[in-house]
Image 1 (tube, one colour):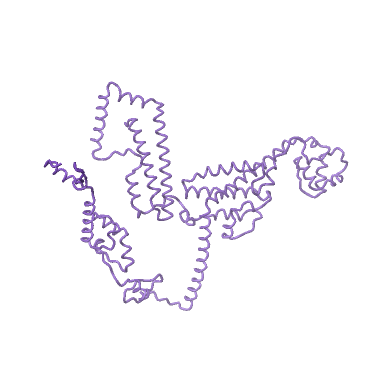
Image 2 (image 1 turned 60 degrees about the vertical axis):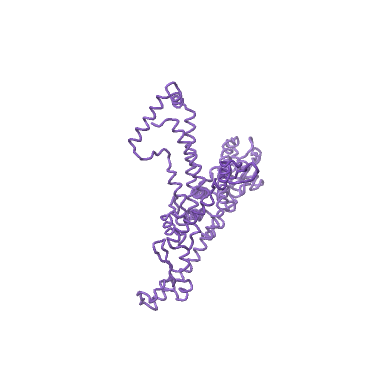
Length: 501
């Protein structure tokens, strides 16, 4: 059983190694977008493990079970030597059973992590799931949101490219709250959930929840002031004062519905809304509906239910406004991905049109020439094939120097055609692996060297030059004699033995 003090030491070591791993992961060069996303996810996993180790350490130092206190007393008490030899015997027994196998005390294999970080040519695995449209986090896939947008009531049908130009402008969809129904709320929630999920996959180090909480707090603060874009008229919808509403009409002196028509449409609408009745229709219908309440108990109607409905409606509008502002905030964080998505869709549409024209040409050719020759193309000079399967022109073959072959003895007499391929192979895996097998670092000093003997000779010369530049006390350490003359150590020792100082 591992002791408490050893467990604490392991946690401290793990925390230090995690910090080192996060530092190396941050400073290493990222050669692709996929490598950058994977690196952020690895750093996030290291940070989570660091926090978990810190919590475990805190519990050990609090020592609620008093186990650490008992262990400290055992190794510092009167029988400390007996405790020491007992623990030593336990360690020896463990190594007898385990043999030469090293003990794995840490949760992560940091040696393997550091080895992988030192290899810039390592293959990046798929650490996160993305759709084909998202391109491993480079683009947004808003097709599901686009389908829900087209199903909204009163929305003009547009294509996907036009939707990408205006989908975040939620405050301009409709100024009337009657169109922002349950389907609209479902659309905004779908968009928010997708953007939050996309940010968590592409930028795991960002605290998205904290950003959403800040937006919700800002909407709560600006709601009563009417400062939320698109919701200025609905902000005070539920804030009604207690007692009779200012739009109510006293029906005690009214003798007919015709007299109520003189109040106008809007005044009758406000009076009906206070009573909780339907407030639509023509002027005569509203007057008849209001006059019908004269001899009923609705005159003594309690406004609590009306105020409750208004407050409920205001709360729903506030939640919807919060969702809209959160979507706007998320789009501000994803501005670069949004621009890249528009460019990607435009590029696909342009490529799609070209492909359709090519398909039409192919159909025409098939009609005119139904017999297609599938034989091997004539290539007596063994020229490389172009993208269409035909040999490239001979002048292009000679221009790129593909008629010249270069051999590299270090790579096992591998041949490379053309100077570009030859120069590029010095930084590729085959040459780097062969140099490591020879015990020589693959640096710029060995560029254009293909012979093993020449590489070894240059490496030996470099090592000798390094030895000459090292510090040699016999020659480089300076002494001063009684006359003030500066001599090296060897001369000083000779003069001292001869008694000439």
